[in-house]
Length: 244
View 1 (tube, rainbow, N blue to C red):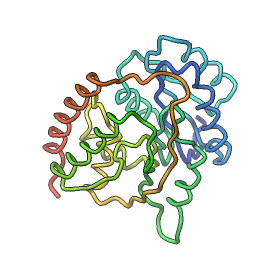
View 2 (cartoon, helix red, strand yellow):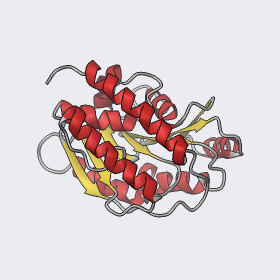
View 3 (cartoon, rainbow, N blue to C red):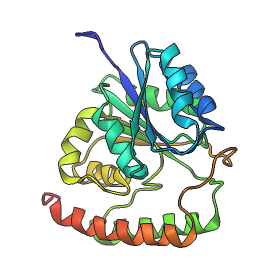
View 4 (cartoon, one colour):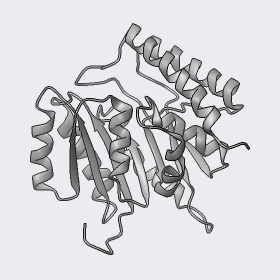
């Protein structure tokens, strides 16, 4: 990146075994973010994919300097997301998944909301999936997460782990001291931190659709185990946070 270049937003996108759909996901980010905001970048983290995701991404990046690809050993979605955030240069970071379940044409609504009004821009704008096209098991776990946040932190965040968040990067830099490497759901922890320190946040409805390609990497009992570990990490996170 050239010295002095302004990067308004870094799209951070973890990807694992998404060979059938990664081009569509990247093209959506190019069309709805990179083409509309000069200087914006896309950071895709290939999380040790065993298919052709990595080679497809390399082809895309070779043709578009706005796209950067990080190839890492498989460490899970949370680890990949944190690796991407560590490489982001933008004033804001936009956290998205590579499954294309939330249409990226909603990005501009989030960006406009963050910069509306005469005051300073908002610290964050979060999407809310009021209608979700996921397995019922996942919807139930989302409700359980909501209950846990109320009990542990005394806060309510609708769809706290949504993979559709626009956040000022400085906020992430402040929050990450409390979010250790290996955290399974750093996006969730970031949302809790932002509520805890009274960041300015807006919430906007976004569409959600069925997954068209790829496979869900965490299923049923593996997902239950994931949630148990994440709950323990939430307890540790609560102890690490500064008092109100």
